[in-house]
Image 1 (cartoon, rainbow, N blue to C red):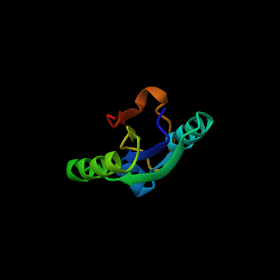
Image 2 (image 1 turned 180 degrees about the horizontal axis):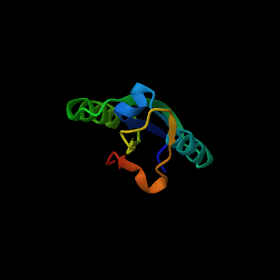
Image 3 (image 1 turned 90 degrees about the vertical axis):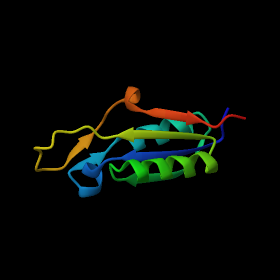
Length: 96
Protein backbone atom coordinates (compact mmCIF):
# COMPACT_ATOMS: atom_id res chain seq x y z
CA UNK A 1 0.00 0.00 0.00
CA UNK A 2 1.32 3.48 -0.84
CA UNK A 3 2.51 5.51 2.12
CA UNK A 4 2.41 9.13 0.87
CA UNK A 5 -0.15 11.14 -1.06
CA UNK A 6 -0.57 14.52 -2.67
CA UNK A 7 -3.84 16.27 -3.45
CA UNK A 8 -4.32 18.73 -6.29
CA UNK A 9 -7.50 20.82 -6.36
CA UNK A 10 -8.14 22.46 -9.71
CA UNK A 11 -10.45 25.41 -10.01
CA UNK A 12 -10.57 29.13 -10.52
CA UNK A 13 -13.74 29.08 -8.39
CA UNK A 14 -11.76 27.95 -5.34
CA UNK A 15 -9.01 30.50 -5.93
CA UNK A 16 -11.53 33.33 -6.31
CA UNK A 17 -13.36 32.40 -3.10
CA UNK A 18 -16.65 31.62 -4.84
CA UNK A 19 -16.41 27.96 -3.82
CA UNK A 20 -15.14 26.45 -0.58
CA UNK A 21 -13.60 23.03 -1.10
CA UNK A 22 -14.86 20.13 1.00
CA UNK A 23 -13.23 17.34 -1.01
CA UNK A 24 -9.75 17.61 0.50
CA UNK A 25 -11.11 17.37 4.05
CA UNK A 26 -12.97 14.18 3.21
CA UNK A 27 -10.02 12.66 1.36
CA UNK A 28 -7.49 13.51 4.10
CA UNK A 29 -9.66 11.80 6.70
CA UNK A 30 -10.09 8.69 4.58
CA UNK A 31 -6.41 8.47 3.68
CA UNK A 32 -5.35 8.92 7.31
CA UNK A 33 -7.78 6.13 8.25
CA UNK A 34 -5.99 3.92 5.70
CA UNK A 35 -2.58 4.78 7.14
CA UNK A 36 -1.46 7.17 4.41
CA UNK A 37 0.33 10.45 4.99
CA UNK A 38 -0.94 13.42 2.93
CA UNK A 39 2.11 15.57 2.27
CA UNK A 40 0.62 18.45 0.28
CA UNK A 41 -2.64 19.97 -0.87
CA UNK A 42 -2.26 22.33 -3.82
CA UNK A 43 -4.97 24.61 -5.21
CA UNK A 44 -4.26 25.60 -8.80
CA UNK A 45 -6.07 27.47 -11.59
CA UNK A 46 -7.87 25.99 -14.59
CA UNK A 47 -4.76 26.16 -16.75
CA UNK A 48 -3.59 23.08 -18.66
CA UNK A 49 0.11 23.94 -18.38
CA UNK A 50 -0.11 24.55 -14.62
CA UNK A 51 -2.09 21.33 -14.14
CA UNK A 52 0.44 19.29 -16.14
CA UNK A 53 3.39 20.77 -14.26
CA UNK A 54 1.82 20.25 -10.83
CA UNK A 55 0.72 16.66 -11.55
CA UNK A 56 4.16 15.76 -12.94
CA UNK A 57 5.91 17.21 -9.87
CA UNK A 58 3.49 15.41 -7.55
CA UNK A 59 4.17 12.11 -9.32
CA UNK A 60 7.85 12.50 -8.56
CA UNK A 61 7.24 13.39 -4.92
CA UNK A 62 4.55 10.99 -3.62
CA UNK A 63 3.29 7.46 -4.05
CA UNK A 64 -0.27 8.48 -4.99
CA UNK A 65 -1.67 11.73 -6.41
CA UNK A 66 -5.35 12.70 -6.27
CA UNK A 67 -6.90 15.46 -8.35
CA UNK A 68 -10.29 17.10 -8.04
CA UNK A 69 -11.82 19.71 -10.31
CA UNK A 70 -14.62 22.00 -9.23
CA UNK A 71 -17.75 22.06 -11.30
CA UNK A 72 -20.00 24.84 -10.10
CA UNK A 73 -22.55 27.23 -11.54
CA UNK A 74 -20.86 30.40 -12.72
CA UNK A 75 -23.82 32.51 -11.66
CA UNK A 76 -23.22 32.09 -7.93
CA UNK A 77 -22.40 35.27 -6.03
CA UNK A 78 -22.04 33.86 -2.53
CA UNK A 79 -19.51 31.25 -1.41
CA UNK A 80 -20.74 27.69 -1.36
CA UNK A 81 -19.19 24.35 -0.58
CA UNK A 82 -18.00 22.19 -3.43
CA UNK A 83 -18.63 18.54 -2.70
CA UNK A 84 -18.21 16.29 -5.67
CA UNK A 85 -18.12 13.01 -3.79
CA UNK A 86 -15.61 10.20 -4.10
CA UNK A 87 -16.50 9.52 -7.75
CA UNK A 88 -15.16 12.97 -8.70
CA UNK A 89 -11.61 12.11 -7.62
CA UNK A 90 -8.97 10.94 -10.01
CA UNK A 91 -5.93 9.18 -8.62
CA UNK A 92 -2.60 8.33 -10.12
CA UNK A 93 -0.21 5.70 -8.76
CA UNK A 94 3.46 5.77 -9.64
CA UNK A 95 4.54 2.41 -11.09
CA UNK A 96 7.02 0.56 -8.91
